[in-house]
Image (cartoon, rainbow, N blue to C red):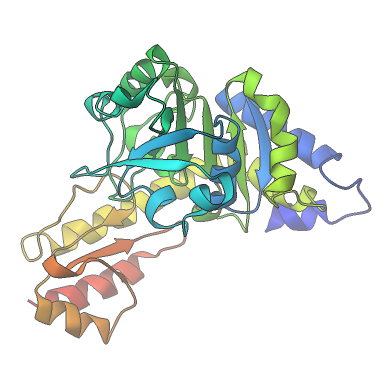
Length: 321
């Protein structure tokens, strides 16, 4: 918010031809490498659609986990806007592995099938699990060996890097990611996300696809200034470390009472309740039911979750045993 206020001084040229946007571009190059180009956008779904569009031809498909955000939580945006086919793989923990990718490659060269062109992973996954740098690199190697690209939905990339004790670059550029969306809003920003292109030959079309994708801001300085503020002085890291710590506090507080469906590796906790406990909790708290048949719920902490917030929820959960 302070960055927005600071940018609201005087006039500026529209559509990104301003110093705040240049500063943002410099900040992303510093974080992801000199070859990185970054484009400010409004939301993660838009950044995903534009990013995927850079890599796809009319007859191509995207290999992703069935639980992936692009498949289950973006209202079919990639399929509707890009006309692509999502080639989904069922996984237990939301993570793709090289064998999952290889299992989809039998379609290559077969004119009757959509052609696998992109491998898309979420960091962290929708199950709250994270990919290590080695796991990302293994997927990149398989994808590139078969002429595919590697895309990362980085809505919670900051949380993954904070949990892994890693830099943003180590989990992306150095691991072979070609294109990613960088999540700002979930880490404290206000309607600010970024598309980051790490394969320079994909960059020329980005300006046009961003406009077609309705992600071009006329007053871009207000979006760009937030992204710069996140990347400078490790604000992204401090926010993510805090969110993750609150998730671990929650998980530790209910340990021994409610088991967890997935390990806590970011800022998401998935307790397994009883049906009675789930119904009762619905009268007290707002939360997402992850899997109703097994009474698994999804609880997500954020950059501004307080210890008191967590402890109140722990008390509620423990009272339901």
